[in-house]
Image (cartoon, rainbow, N blue to C red):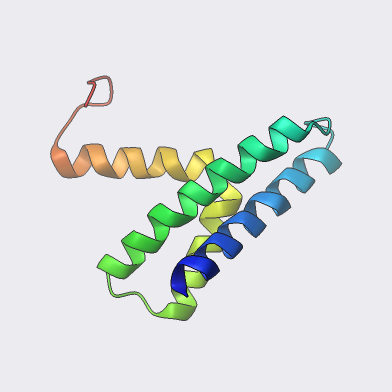
Length: 96
């Protein structure tokens, strides 16, 4: 069940982000762009789910963080990359 709610919350965050970009005139609607945003949002939400689980974050706070990271999409993933590099000690321009 937590995977279904993670999928729903992160995807919904991606939909909201996509709609916001459309309304602000930063994007024109294209199905492939929507699908891209949803895939990225779902991935960001899943990573957030595992971070929350590892950190023993409450279910309510996890839901909030998953939805926000789904909305952030690639920005959330970039933040996870920075965190990953700090944890393993890699420099920004190093390939891992």
